[in-house]
Length: 182
Image (cartoon, rainbow, N blue to C red; front, side, top):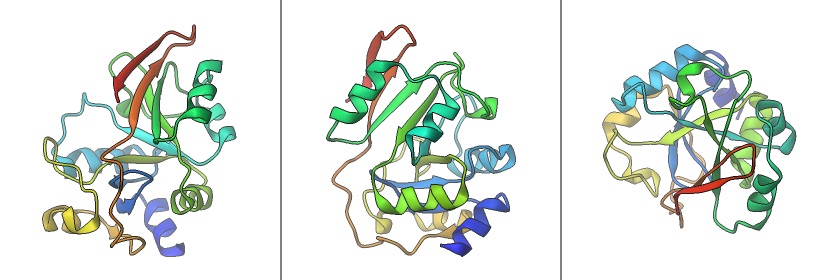
């Protein structure tokens, strides 16, 4: 774990298991690291990426959380990413064109521990090239992607995710809701 934190703090990128699929991650507040991920994925810069947080407090530090969001987080059995308006303290390169950001409050222990030790939100984008299938297990990740990141986490490499991604729901501050992905 200490080595992973060193890689992230030095602006590096990692492959890691999330509460859904394998992801490419970095310190979400480090713009150079964020840009590395866009380059690795060959992803257009106008496509936003989501971030992961480990606690309600960190979520509240980044966005004003509408009451409806808490209900969805509490009731959802599947991991859920919520798109919030007007985030604070994040590079504009991470944000969608309308200035919103997708954030998932993780429930799995590995991600919680990683984000707690880093003490910053973590970028999470599927560990594939844009347009390709998302990796449910480590062996699904192309060797080219593995070679492009700074470190590939050893944890849970044999585990197969039961989720091919999270649900994505946009919630406006006035509690309007739109399901973007079930």
